[in-house]
Length: 303
Image 1 (cartoon, rainbow, N blue to C red):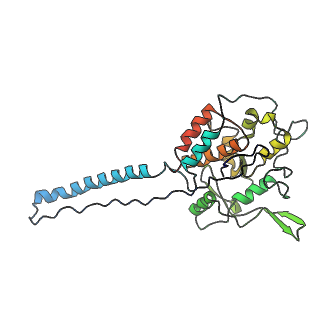
Image 2 (cartoon, rainbow, N blue to C red; image 1 turned 180 degrees about the vertical axis):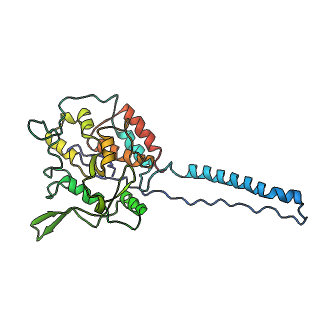
């Protein structure tokens, strides 16, 4: 989701407008029939016909390949936002020369740790979904795990298009009791495209990723924020959180786009849009190297 502009008081976008559907084009290249002749064809000429037909076929396939390359985005996944939309975000984000290393970052909240972003997945924030009785992790799992479709391609499309899940994170009985439900279905990893059957694997192998990493946010300005704003950022399900496979999340760690892009190049556009959304929503910059990497990722977006 992409904000048209962010609110300086809450950090929440007033409107989020990048959910463009994947462009699908149908190509049709007519091939004319060869001219017919009334003269009988010699055996020598007839022997050359299969070779000529083969050459013509190669030429036609080559032309089709050029048309496809020019008419389609360079491998963007279904649901990827448009190049214009993401380029607009890239133009808006602040750019700094490099990422400093600011001391004082501690994620752990046990013992004497600083716990600078608050307890992990706390429900006690002003972030979207905060205060609903379920942890932030439970909220994200309920949103991103979909009811199992007939095939894996449908699962991927359902995630990209934002289809609703049949399960919800919160149910209320008589308006008083809150019960958090662990959803079942499939997760289409937004970074790799891998489809995970939660009924078989469980949710332990599914991580919640901060698209704009917490450590990077700390280094690039969050160290100045109030504790409440940092807790909101760490639990903002709309702007900065995605359910992903644990292997991918571990590989990403606290890297920014200059050092990490999704393993599936078709998902670079989606990732660039989400990263820039989080940055703009909270007034965080990107480094010059990140800007270059994001610019390259945007070239994979549909035109």
